[in-house]
Length: 508
Ligand SMILES: Cc1cc2nc3c(=O)[nH]c(=O)nc-3n(C[C@H](O)[C@H](O)[C@H](O)COP(=O)(O)OP(=O)(O)OC[C@H]3O[C@@H](n4cnc5c(N)ncnc54)[C@H](O)[C@@H]3O)c2cc1C
Image (cartoon, rainbow, N blue to C red):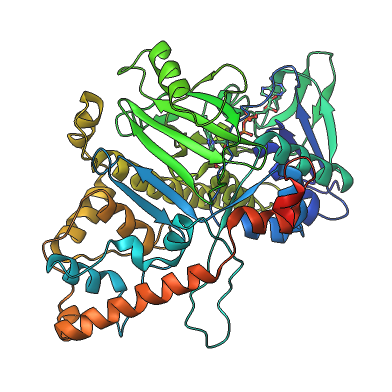
């Protein structure tokens, strides 16, 4: 009897999603598995996606990737968080930094004490109590894991990198571990007459690539999941109104800051991602509120270096597939859905899609219970990330027509519930293993001007003096800790110097 286990996996698409998937499968599926990736150079990739969140390090570690080599190969930098410029109000800035906010005391998260002190006018800005934010503003970085009984919190970090170089790096990794790459344009998707499952991809030159399990990494077009299986798409345009972006790199500008910047503009926002060899920039905007010409001109007028080429237009729709896994096709990356890059979550969703695929790797025919569980977990994850990103739009303090319209939107029920709870008592809970935890929510809520009516009653247990002392101890120690860290550019140069991007003097 033939072995029914799907041991022949075909990946359609070789962008970041395709090569991350191939690299992970090549690393973890041992003997007996065949991994084939089909991509078309002629079609190319989306070519953006350069800011990440700290979990990317787990992915790299699982693959055994050396951090210095990785940063060298992808011209990457370290990232401590995202600065939001002009979101709460024009001219106002806050940081959503990775890591802890303050230090808990007794049973309570720190922010309840801070809310009490803030209401009495006795607190510094919340960012003064977040080590990553203090270090980011000072352009400093260090590898700090929590050491023994040290009071110093860890410094979680992510990367900025060149998306094209990252995919190329992972391609070398995957091919070295047996992934077979097939070049060619997929022209048809063959289905099994009986089961309805996908059986093969047919390329323009007639080549037939057969498989048992297919991973659709074909980008927005969703060649298999939508083009063939017609899975359906849940549109989130009413919550996330931006549907276009212009992207353009410019010359690197010093100092090389260890954070992404997201600057609110009249009909969207502009990203700034510092890399070793250039700065990535883009304007994410709503085509209903600004013309493409004006958006491109706005982007070009707000670069801090000479542009390297003309702005490139990308069109997209916020939302998700009705099923991430349909029949024997798992959609990963843009083929599965898209939330705009405000919180750098797309590559993370690729990563968790891959982890989940490995968890649910079929041992025999695909079980519908497995498929359902995969879809349920994926839905929960992406819906919660959507809520977090929607909050940034809803809670803005700007006056442009685009921004005023966002303040009036009807929120997703899950976000409404969370805001009600926060408004009443400053309470923030993390449900299941949703991505954003209390530190992320509190920084964005407060950063965008949302304050609760009250805080947790136990925060009143400290006297005013004790409260002042508690807050001062934390902010003073974070200032001291940050001052001891090396400058970001210098440390990066020492850590992974590439002769072409750093002068000898900066390495010395
Ligand atoms: C404006 C913008 C900014 C972004 N910024 C970030 C960010 O900062 N951080 C982040 O995490 N994410 C970001 N993203 C998302 C990120 O770019 C994607 O998640 C990531 O690049 C993965 O894309 P992909 O591999 O799914 O698709 P793609 O890069 O589009 O790759 C699709 C692949 O499928 C192949 N293909 C398609 N059709 C065929 C066919 N018929 N035959 C053969 N091959 C085919 C293509 O050749 C290509 O290889 C951003 C996205 C956009 C639009």
